[in-house]
Image 1: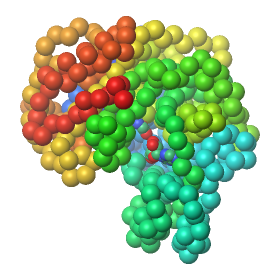
Image 2 (image 1 turned 90 degrees about the vertical axis):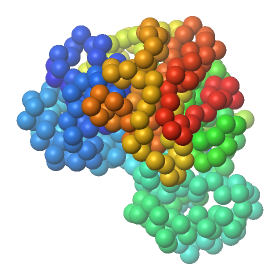
Image 3 (image 1 turned 90 degrees about the horizontal axis):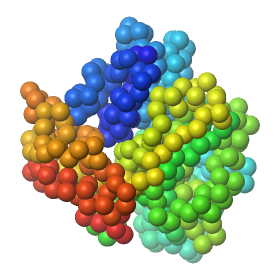
Length: 425
Ligand code: AMP
Ligand code: GLY
């Protein structure tokens, strides 16, 4: 099969490196890819959100199967466009991707089907939202723009004043454009966050190994929220008992609810969970693999990823056994100084060989997943906030972390920054 992966971050690099091992794929491509991905496969310079152009590219190159990895194209309907053009895809269609594309939709779905989540109110009217926030006597709260907002649409105000500022930012100043037409004001939940990615064909749901993301920019969970600064898998607090509860109360009910609503969800469904004193609850759904969760989780996948992807599309996940290495994985992200705010790009990266991997031979236990990099005449330069992730697999979490950090210390560029407490907090 000729397979194209859409996207250009660390997640896509992880998907591509896993698909490269598949016996079912003869030719593998990416669009737009990045510096590291271009060492592994040929990249086409088409943006992930260019639906028409991407469809044209896939038809012209006679691609058999497209994996749509990022949220924006999924929410915009990339899968619908490709399938209409006769190309098979992995990822939910537009109707199902609303699970991530509209927080109002997902909250209402959870309420309707009794799926545990934080209590909430939704508002389209600024005055009504203000009045509600003024009446609150418990802080913090979570204020969320309805639509996609590059991961910045969730604000956690500690008092009335900052909550009102958040509403103004979203609804009046329209900081997130149309994504802020509706807002959710939500009860604040306390507990450990757990990411569970799951393969689903709309009927069967098969969770992957759980993961713990580290979203804040700085050590000690301080600083601004980011896309994710590092991940460990499996999550130490995700016991079999918790998994059984999640399966019964959250995973199966969500897939069933989507089917009942006529929005069959096929692809990777990401459950952002919080383990509260009252049991696990859903903080958010994503309609795709997490980044950097995918880097760690897919490193633990033993089965052929393409075989799973085909089973999802053909709705025969039920009969497929998915195998995992019973090991631990850690991914530590090396970011540009200043991320997630302002940062420089175009800085030469040292420590990476011409294959995009670490200069020193570390065997197969360590991989570099490029995110914001470009390859110029065989040399890598920075091109984004999260530059690359160093992912290690080992028998124990401690060993995976040690190996990942050994790799991280070999990479250098001006103002490079990483958290030193991934997996240790
Ligand atoms: P999101 O952009 O939806 O991933 O949310 C960003 C982060 O905000 C989450 O990972 C949580 O840490 C936090 N968050 C969102 N909603 C809540 C909530 N209801 N209670 C506590 N924390 C929350
Ligand atoms: N790491 C969280 C996400 O991918 O949304």
